[in-house]
Image (cartoon, rainbow, N blue to C red; front, side, top):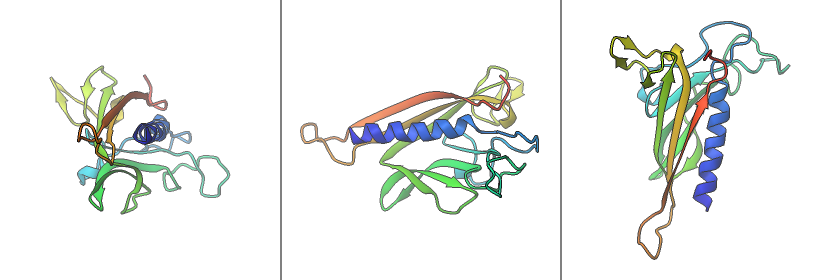
Length: 172
């Protein structure tokens, strides 16, 4: 029960934030999905990194044309801490992630691109390469397991939650 609630809450947070990826109301440019040299911090099959302009430095609530404010540069990925696999959320380029959920065994992303291709960014499909700017939908799949072993089966229980997210700020 706790695992299911954790997965639902985790998915809700991720869906809400991914929906607003690439929000650029001032048309500053350079806002959207991100590719980094470090595999944990890029947009691929096992992590997602995006920016959005939704806050102003002066807390007026109006976007200010950059992604330097709180919760505008977001990255989700798996990491291990204390022997426990966790889903982490990193904001603003912070070194250490905030734990979103524990006992997460799998986190995967798949993307639907403007041309109808499905896969991961920078993957070549025929004669075209899937670009970050062409992402239109993101499939998120999170698998968690119970911390305790079931006394009857002697196994942990696992559950997977999967959903598609339409990125509202990109044309479709």
